[in-house]
Image 1 (cartoon, rainbow, N blue to C red):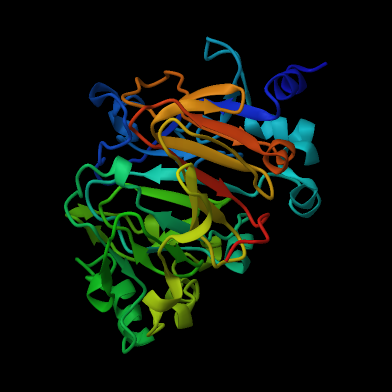
Image 2: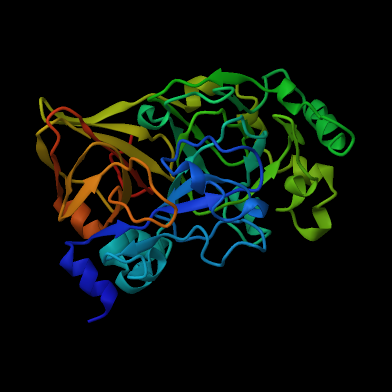
Length: 395
């Protein structure tokens, strides 16, 4: 029997995951990842500070030629030593439908999404993620994504906790084009054409491919499709200057200086939707509850790609929670047991340290139900759960 199958069967189809941190060479870290303050430059100053933590990932981060080939890939661990591990990607390849479900195995051949904590002290640049047809031209996938702002990881708001989405409805394509043509001449001030919404903790948004967005400065939980691909329309954000390659690096070589092609990366109608908040804001929606025991809310929904739930088990309670398919999850508050494993939210992790706050639940285990127990006398056990389009009951 292989080690992957041995661990799968020994732990009832539920994997413990290694914390995976990601540096980015741009912007400033929010320092809310529960990582030790000395470890934010664990990859070296040339790589930039750690600003993200990835979950349930079978794709590498698009992080330049200095990144390790497995940067961004999630690992399962099964011992006390970090070396006792294997990639989630390897487990998907070996276990197939047992792990990710028959639907995903047949349709995608892999686990199709991942999630992250996105942690920046300042607002990020106004950018979009490619639509599927545009991403295919450069050998990648389109990237729909969603946001949820967990109170447990937002002890402070950063410098500007508001997010820009798209453009004001009266803005014309000519005005946007003028900004792009000024990319190398000075501040192109593209967010002057946009509209910002103040972030409310405990809520979220859905962002379709092709929609410009400049995320605000709260730590964000982001379920998203299997891609790390974008085009940055804003050349100066929070005082930091971005090179022209950020605008065109995901265009075919013969289109990298074609402003019309870059303009075509937008889904224009969604960008200027006058009812943007009505259509894309995502307050929590009740999924199920048992009075005095637990409550589970939908926090990502209303799209054909990704979903997420927030599960709260009340103090000294336990519940068997069933899901319609495989999912990844992270504990953001409390401690107890998650199936056969101890679980606890991270307090302060050293870089490279193992934890008990992240799991991947197979299709077999999810549909049978996972017993989750809260061992605290006072504090709720709160778990964020991310998955693809395998939950037919998603609103």
